[in-house]
Amino acid sequence: MTVPSAPGAQADLLDDAVAILGGARRILVFTGAGISTESGIPDFRGPNGVWRHRDPARYTLQRYLADPDVRRERWQDRLEAAGHGYRPNAAHLAITQLQQAGRAPVVVTQNIDGLHQDAGTSNVIELHGTSREVTCLACHRRLPVGVVLDRVKEGDTDPHCELCGGLLKTATISFGQNLVAADIEAAMQEAERCDACLAIGSTLSVWPAAGVPDRAVHNGVPLVILNDGATELDATASLRVPGRAGAVVPALVERVLVGG
Ligand code: NAD
Image 1 (tube, helix red, strand yellow):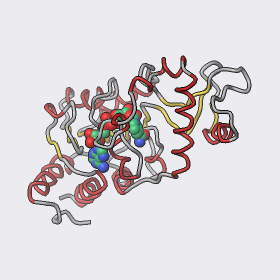
Image 2 (cartoon, rainbow, N blue to C red; image 1 turned 180 degrees about the vertical axis):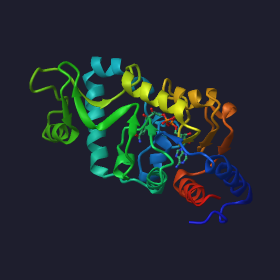
Image 3 (tube, rainbow, N blue to C red; image 1 turned 90 degrees about the horizontal axis):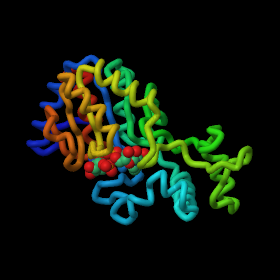
Image 4 (cartoon, rainbow, N blue to C red; image 1 turned 60 degrees about the vertical axis):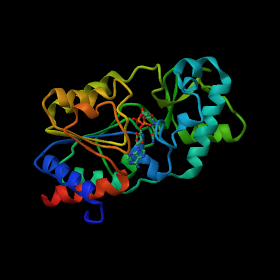
């Protein structure tokens, strides 16, 4: 893929991004829901985001625990998502290339969709957990999501743990739920070790996750934000590149890897 098809201003911004990231040996890639929209998965706050037609208050842990209708809605959402068979897009694949070239040993994501791993990326820290597994909120055993979705399909619309009767929930972190301490600590450590940070497809408005690129900035590391829209960390970024991840990330990675 070549960059010159991009309009002039965009090409200049890519030149600047290559100048910053080209010299970096350890790039922390930090991703959000926007990297997966071109795979067909809606984000939350983008122009076609879930918040346009759903009430964010229904997505808290407290509502999940209290309201069987909320749980039924979530399981139906999961069933529908599983039916789509979402696949990684060119941006996920380009990040794998960057990693395989030794330039991005760790990827930190807010996504729960598992598409980085499907694209072949390893060392992915999933700050908000994964929708590929289910956990019992009482006995904490974990199950593959498919096992539970089969029960939902068969009419068990609010499934409970078959061993202890506890509530089942995908192994994701809902609003109002604490992150796994080891995950956020590992991500913060990477923010202190990296020599550049590339944030892709996130409004950087969900905390403490957004504290990861923020920590990198406070550590004196340049932050490049690639997002189709404003973010909460725009003011502290070294560079903002607007655009669609599926086009911009592969072009950027290709140029970073050839050294210009
Ligand atoms: P967000 O919805 O707050 O922001 C996404 C941003 O990406 C928006 O600014 C949007 O305009 C931009 N965007 C959309 N498509 C893009 C593209 N193709 N290229 C570049 N930018 C694009 O998402 P967030 O900051 O990740 O925070 C939302 C929370 O929702 C996260 O915690 C995440 O866990 C969760 N979430 C995850 C998924 C997923 O796993 N795919 C999907 C929806 C929400």
